[in-house]
Amino acid sequence: AAAAPATGTKRKDESAEAQERLHQAIEASGFLKGGDEAEWISSLQKLIEEFGPREVEAWHERKTKHRHHLVHLAVAKSLPKVLKFLCTEPNSFDVNVQRVSDQCTPMHLAIFYKKPSVVDMMQKCLSPDLTLKNSYGDACDDKYRQYVESKENLIFLDLEMTYGFSGYP
Image (cartoon, rainbow, N blue to C red; front, side, top):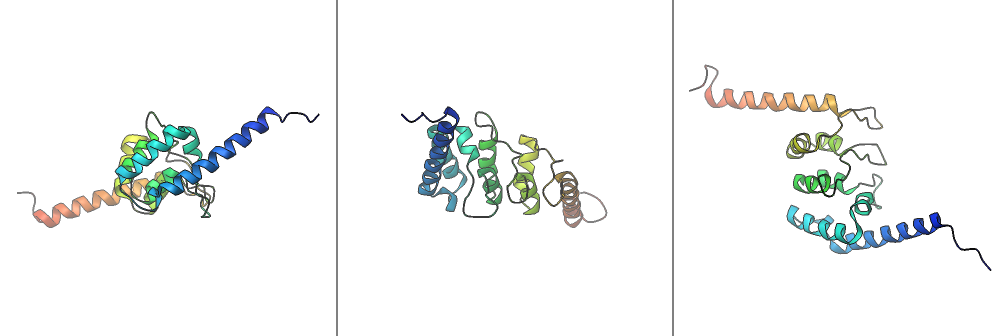
């Protein structure tokens, strides 16, 4: 008689099957191709209820070299409410997850792609680790400081253009 498969192998097979079903469910839902934040959140909530938060968190794209996780896609598509939904209780996705291709975190992408609403929400609500480096050796701390300085310069310039260089009304 053949020996029964090891428990660890059985769990890996079940996990692979669950990931395949999750990929199919995400593809079928179509929310990745379009849709507003409310549609994303509604679709993600259903997926989390069906597959569990850890399984959904582990999902990544298969079709691109970057293999984006959902948190990376939320940043790339400028969906700060979706990112907050994923990374806060009860879901608690890892806000610092790094892409397989280049080790970029969601904050790296938010700064690189100039997504101010996402950068601001992440810093205010999610406390990302700005010291993590991507495969290019870039950490977010210097880039974030530059972002804040440029934002402050824009505010100053706006005030100067609105009220003039002589002062405020």
